Image (spheres, helix red, strand yellow):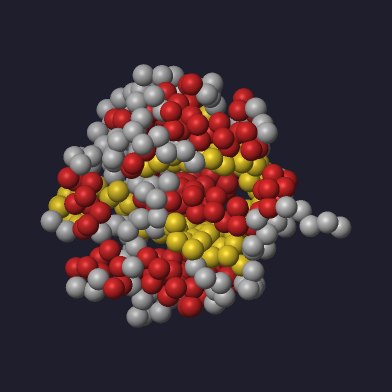
Length: 375
């Protein structure tokens, strides 16, 4: 049989999501996190971070990490490996297993002790790879807050290109003084736990998490139908006022998937609870005719976990698909954007066969993926 070209593989080869896991302030594994969400528990609380006090944020208890990982690791490295271990226990890595790591800041806290070398993202990725038995050269994706989704897209395309048979996708960011002071400088921090899409929202709450999933061409529980990522270059930090980049990203994902967007059952939005992000998403979803589709944001539970957010929220959205449950948007009380949206307000049962996950970030970056439940 004649070998298929790269372009043909890109069009026809399907990639599936299999095992997945996450480590967050709400638990050291996916099941613990899911149980917390079902109980309506959020991870946001008051913390002192750097020079900032009484800051609402979500931080992982180190007790969730110390029993699993090398004592010489940085805290972020422990977070990454803790999320990855269950997948390693379920799968055998080979010389054709890609390793894609997503993070925006990496070991940025090492600067506080004068270790600039340790901040290099390639160094972080290689250290994690060595400790976990990865045989291939790590690939790092660091593109603002769409990094987690982009890492999944990169893994998918590497498999479709024929370069790899499967992939481990790993993401994490740590809540540090550097991150907290940066968002504080933008005057984007909420004085109370964030309220995505709410009338009284006042900004973002920060968090930290790690997430991991395994993808391959073997048929699995979830099939990646299509993805897209478009940068509208609107502003260094502010999203497009028309939602153009997100509209184009969703349109590209739907085109690859060859599906009608009206067949979506659920949207897992970025939903940072900032004035401009939530408004932008509402405009984009209305332009796409998606205003009646149930939509939620998980930022009220976890805060904004930066480069981990896209992957973390994908993992939890897929768990919701399996259970046919829609998680409410914690903190949402009254509609606060100019366009109508079907915000999930309470835990509800619903048949979920098709998911749209979106993400947006600084510099005008946007990403969207459409995933089907196979069984």
